[in-house]
Amino acid sequence: MTGPTLRVDTASPVPPYEQIRAQLAALVYSGQLPEGERLPTIRQLASDLGLAAGTVARAYRELEAAALIRTRRGAGTRVAPPPAVSKRPCPAPEELASLARRFRDEARALGADDSAIRQALRSVLGDAD
Image (cartoon, rainbow, N blue to C red; front, side, top):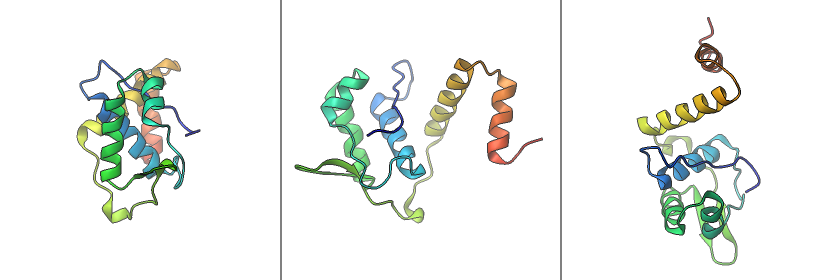
């Protein structure tokens, strides 16, 4: 996986495996992780994130159950062909809240105030004043 970096907030009420699952699912659905892209091994990602391998394994199992990734012996874990649009589940409210918090935190780290953050969201959503 050469694309975006995953982040886990250990202070979040959202379990780490769910944070990983939600981030990877969002990357697959957005096309940032294209079909066939190889994901890190469970051990490697766990090491990179400072988590137990079982945490990453659970996230991968759930992604596999949702047909977003496939694991094959010798070929590793890769992004599966994109699911049909009708099969995409609506994100859970806590997933959206987690994404919004990450956006807010990263925007603040760049020096944006709440007004600028709201304006950016309105612009992206087409709700600009």
